[in-house]
Length: 530
Image (cartoon, rainbow, N blue to C red; front, side, top):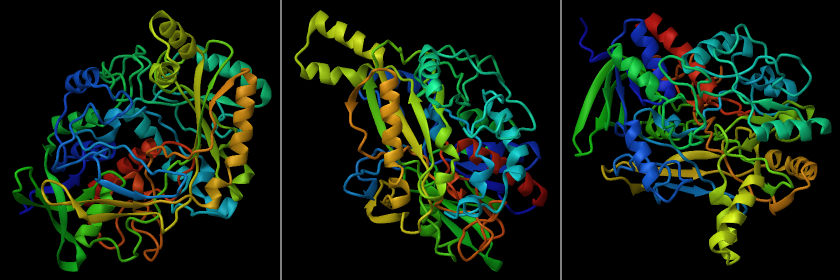
């Protein structure tokens, strides 16, 4: 017996941390998992959603506790960005993490996404290849119950069944909603490849989850639990012996001999401080919260890259009315997208683009304008019915590059209820991202023309997509990166970072599946060492 409190302590209980905890528990290791926020039962989040008016605030159905503020807490994140762009993000601090309110897109990166600099002369290369991560993608897809088809070219470049797969998706695709059928029918002849979007909503019963029945409220909470979220693996890990400590805010990692991390200090809502020791520590917090903890602890930052290189899928969005009903809002909130621009040679000059279709019920989008027109009663009802049937939103998921000046830091001027700092974010768009505007506007015009549509708002503004990458960047060189290919920090041999913040490139797809694959891979390595 050792004098440690556990073999491994994990800070954060989201999808990445919970999957790592589950793998370590399977390997027979003792694990303690700390979570800053509370346990929130599904029924409670659902009840809260029904009772709130802010239906598009995905954080609102979850507790916004003063010792673990959410991203939408006024003043918690102080952001500086460009005059034509407001930096906004959305994440939760509850057991299960931000996947409690996500849309569950589960994409793999493409092989070229791992070698962006070698292929296109921009950005950074990963220290691993697609082939290195491919078997871990398979494992992550099985753990999460990903729905997809391996029959399409997800690169949009005529490469056949791509990217290469060593195993099929665990679940087959669901039936195509009418909107997606019309998109394929109208845009396909123009050369646009409209593909299925792999996701984590079960298309048939899987691993104790029921099949999706199309409630269309994946964001902010799946009412029946068909959609994967991090609490699935929290429950699995706890059932295997992992000790979960909710409402326990980690605020310091303590260094000891040989620069090893020897303890984590955490604070409870009543202000009391506690300490835990372990052989290995994993920080698996959100991509903004992880660098904050490292910086206030003065660890893992000999490269001065902690908190830098912040990336997101910052792009443009466009709403239009088709001349025919499309009936968005049927089924789950994400079904398909356009991938032609995902891996074109133009990546050498400007951002790659993936066009995403929003399949939400659009009543709240169309009603304010109709009310401004003075419509009431049956006239208002008829107008809402007409507009919602023809409303369409298409947005770009745009690749950004790692820049050391785009960064997150602790904000000592803004403290929460237990005295811990908030966040300062500096995030500006460079010419690489802005260079995709002409291409996006050209494509938007084609999309509207195909449906004889009417533009509702000009696609000139910029918005981010809440996908945080780069803030604790991965690489082989300790001088310009924070972790190595195993997610081990260069500075501390027993400190690992399981967060999408390790990703050296953003590509154009949601990072969660890649983060889970990396976390499972890291957990297997840790299990060999403790």
